Amino acid sequence: MKKFYVLAKILFLFFAVVSLGLVTVSCSDDDDDEIKAIKSITMSPETESSLIGLLGQNYSWRKDLPDESLLVISNTEDFHSYFGSEANIDIDFDKYTLLCGWVIAYSTATTIESQNLTFNKKKNSYIYSITLNYADGGYQVISSIYFCALYNKLSKKVELEMHR
Image 1 (tube, helix red, strand yellow):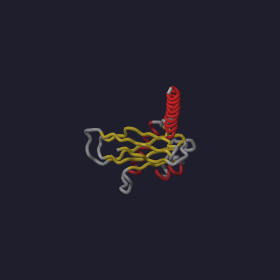
Image 2 (spheres, one colour):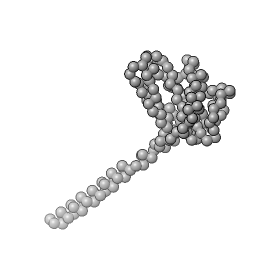
Image 3 (cartoon, one colour):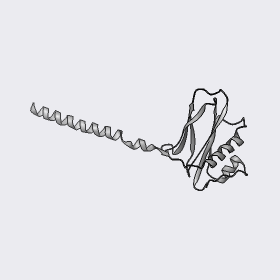
Image 4 (cartoon, helix red, strand yellow):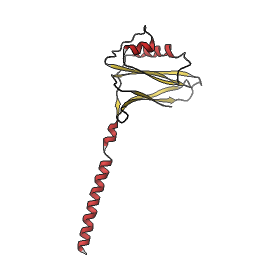
């Protein structure tokens, strides 16, 4: 009978150690490495203001555009195709990628709460997330909110993810 208790304790300890090992492996931090936040480069207020002005000048009057859009600009040719050949901006496209665009808002109190760029290893692409904030007290109108951000050169596809 004593041998039975010793064998039961050994089996219990064996299964406890194996179970603990399985839990440790399944709860590893490998999934945390799947998505990585990318920090933006600070633009001068003049550059950012010029970009917002160019977006409004070139895209606010067009009725054929979607409610939200992201322009990924990686070179001077792309920049001129979006804003015209006369438009100039102080950005070195050999080093940086410009993300800019618009979202249609239905209230004057709507603002952009956050903008984040992450790299998703599984999808092998970047995801640019924008979260809108709907504050109380605004007038109900259709308006455009323009956004722009500068990043070190991006080499993969960028998807827009809008949180309304």
